[in-house]
Image 1 (cartoon, rainbow, N blue to C red):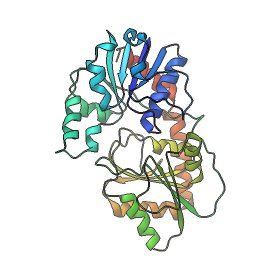
Image 2 (image 1 turned 60 degrees about the vertical axis):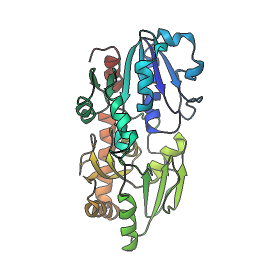
Image 3 (image 1 turned 90 degrees about the vertical axis):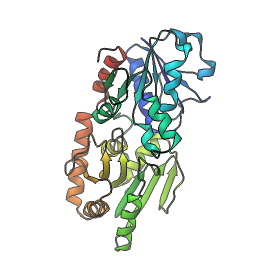
Image 4 (image 1 turned 45 degrees about the vertical axis):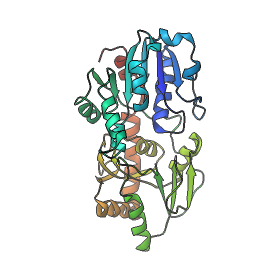
Length: 330
């Protein structure tokens, strides 16, 4: 098949990583794969084995694609309505319901909900996304899942260290993420209680509170080093399409302390992480304190996390599901 993915941005985002994984692995299976960003940019921070071209300078073959996949809400109308894609099957990869990033009374919320009714075949990464989309979608909804590449995520620390080092990933404040800044409050509560530890962080945006070290838009190798060099990933969010950084951290040998409301596939409390419902700040903080002082618990979660990723997050099975969806067989 000739397959095109249409993206808004090529930046250092988890969603872009998944798109690159899809296109690389579909290319390896013999498909003619193209990446068309709506910005004049390309993916340069990950290994790529597929074709890339700015959509405004796209070659004529764009009208000869078998399948065109929109990858964010902003690109869904283009793929659903533009004649440049010819007779291609029109699909949309939904990794998160983007209207949840906005207040329900906002114009962004309303326009993104409207996009859910576009005539697209949706591909989603979790059962909860399918259930939500079925309330709006006019076409079929297929469920796939994500994988973790063991060549990119594995224990690879920068340096040995003494004591405990925490990692905060995705320092993003919006309606779907850590809107109440539970992560900050839990960390400050333990600092004020006299616990000694380092706090590292990385995200697409600048920090809003003090970290011992912080990286904005780190490259792939740095991301692996950060997970591997820290003892505990501290992450809170209201919604996730499906946990991604959590599994990346597990693959790199970092324990996971989690608060989440919806989208907690792959996270099992007491097995591969400690988990509470988003909003339960007291238990979230207590769990973090447990992981800091209980070396055996932390080591158990780390080993179980590595095993889970190895057994349940392989890309081979994930691409099998994706290929079936792209062919319209599921």
